[in-house]
Image (cartoon, rainbow, N blue to C red; front, side, top):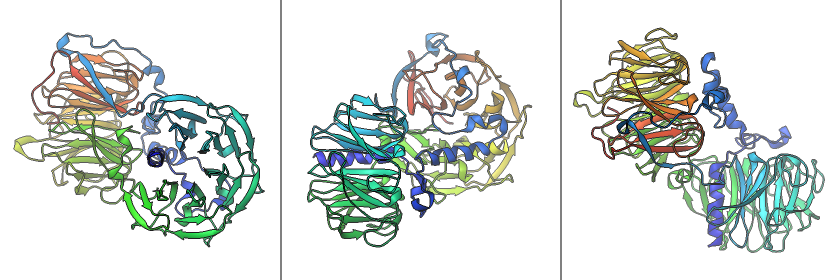
Length: 625
């Protein structure tokens, strides 16, 4: 049972952790001599996104989770009273989901290990610390801070616990091992940067055998080093290459009950098995997506029966399982295991269908996550890429009256349509500024006029500062808008919704206003200006409508929701900056279900909050009409 739990916790850590991009896709660690932080890929994506934005709103476009409102936080500190009008227009908090439990505020967790009592130790790499939890996930203690002194860390990336509860931490950028007791008291340390015995270059995975010996993946030196429990060097093996006993970026290490050492050889896309002295025994795996093939295997764990679990990080599947001889047994595809039942990572939009299922695009994992209205996880699909059903920073989402889901696949400059289970139905769009072409589509809305099962589609073509209208098959119908601040012009149009009468509401983020049009694009009215007062905005990005035509706006920079009637008359507001119930941090989209319940997705709090009209437990009429 303990072995199974170890595997489960290991999967969680890998699911929440980005793989260093310099260790995969054929790049050789020897050629660089430096370790690439796991966050670099996310930062690179954020910078690319920002470059595609208009200069006026570039800072608002950064999708690095803890940076999206950098520069707006002073404005966001303004506090607002909860609903200021009558009870009929007040909203009460119902529940929240998606956020991490208390103490789970990790930043790039790189490794986990369990002691004999079932306590879980996490190498919280980006926060430069170690956290200890009991088996239920309750935080017990934590220690460490950024630095190179005793008990300090520079991106701890590996962790192992021996049978006595002694903890070993791979302090990656300090090129050393630190040894602690179970309370975090430092016992000893060893190692320095280099290629000699007991020196390291980018150490990652570690494992302890039944005798207390420690095996370390010395990644950039392409070798395994073995030490006794006090840090005395015993033996080493490996060099760069593809032959038996050679490595190209060894990352994960595990020891089975016989003392054999298994190594995830990441850039050779294979597993190698050795005895405790480093003598080569066997190997399996080759690059590919078939059963038993591997693509950048990263993490590795062994259960009490000798079965091996491999985190196949380059594929959409999370885990492959092998017996002790390397025979493929089974796999866990990503639709079968989802960290979203524990935490959302970078949710960017939200939609509710007629059955009150909630759909959320997650830009960090490039997937769509589906919940029921109570927050129960139902399904997930997608991974990063440009193929069918793959995404690159999906930011907007809508559902039609038939339950089909439309996704604004932002960086791929296209729209993809799925049924409610995630099966791809069709796709359209390519990069450009001509009719039907797209440049950073941020949001999407679907009407259902004249009894159509799937109506016309409206796209906030943000990079082109316009709205495009298409029929249900993606055929171009009309467009309107250009860059500017006049009526019918836009500065990064972000959120979009269509009312029951066919009127189109657009969150004109860069101009800090809402614009309203008829279904053909004729300008009707607008409201809003920059500020923190009632009816003023600081980057309105999300928009939702209820069955009465009232307009809800996610006022990102002011950390609040504002409600208006369909003509733009202010009705109420709620929210302030924070992480408590009814507080927000980067509210980026909003949706209203058929009962009038309001769902708000927050980028920085990694969660969804649900609110209900006070005194109106039930409301009539459909949403997203």
